Amino acid sequence: MTLLISKYMYDRLRELGVPVKMTRTTDETLDSTVRSRRITDAYGTGKDVIVISNHINAGGPAFLGCD
Image 1: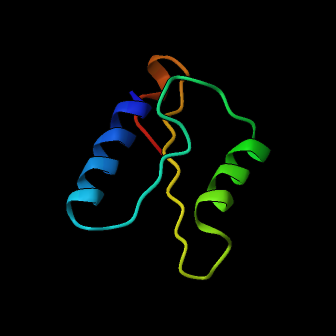
Image 2: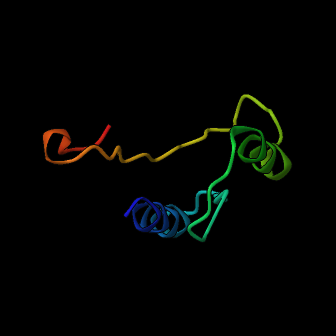
């Protein structure tokens, strides 16, 4: 589900003319080093770079919702 939400956001931001890059487009696990490298390789470390990270926490019925 997280990947579907991210793909929707990617498409919508592109429609609005925002330069955007996804760190992954398939269901794969990335450690923080690889994820960070993909971001900086795409856009550098300038003050004009905004990173959005989507997470949906799993935990069963007691943990319904998103962060």
